[in-house]
Length: 248
Image (cartoon, rainbow, N blue to C red; front, top):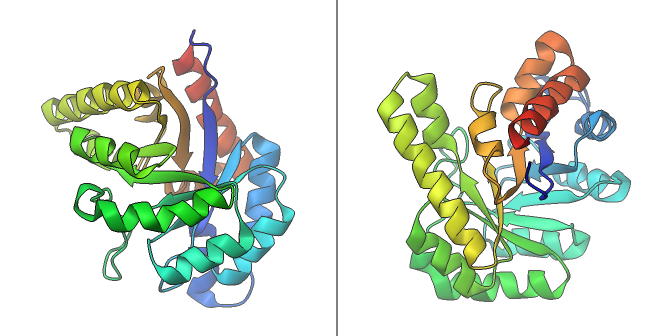
């Protein structure tokens, strides 16, 4: 069993998606975050998108004020989002790519193409005490660029691996898993803290959780969906059980 703890960050974005489908204040993402805390979540993740399609500014204010576990604030690399992050000073900020037409965040950030801009963008966040994470593909060039710009953390995009698993593309699934394994080790060798997430389910979490370099998994959409059938607390408890089992 590895001596490095594996944390679970629960993303509560899609509680807000359900709320916003009808308007009003129910279901409340802050209530979901409190339940997730009590169920064993080590942190709460929330993505304030530019179009505010799910999480709202008010949600971020409530989470920042009420949580006793760390808040991981996902955000695009824009001036507006930087100002919001600097106002609230969350424990962590995760810089993600964002397109208005996409249903969810697709692919990782192309750090190597915007290295200079991103280095200047994250500097004030680091100075404010936020841990800066970059959401990227399992690609050596992107990891090296994230390291050069001063990110403390990288979150490896597990979506391609999860999609290949769901569609029964076994060879591709194994290639994606091998790439994630190799790049987790490479990132850790540079001194980066390694996180992973996107699309993880009960069926796909254990191979990723078994990587000794990975310190945190961020999981949201699946857990919120599973909560419809079994409740949020049991859904999180089962994910936690599978992660711990894989770590042994």
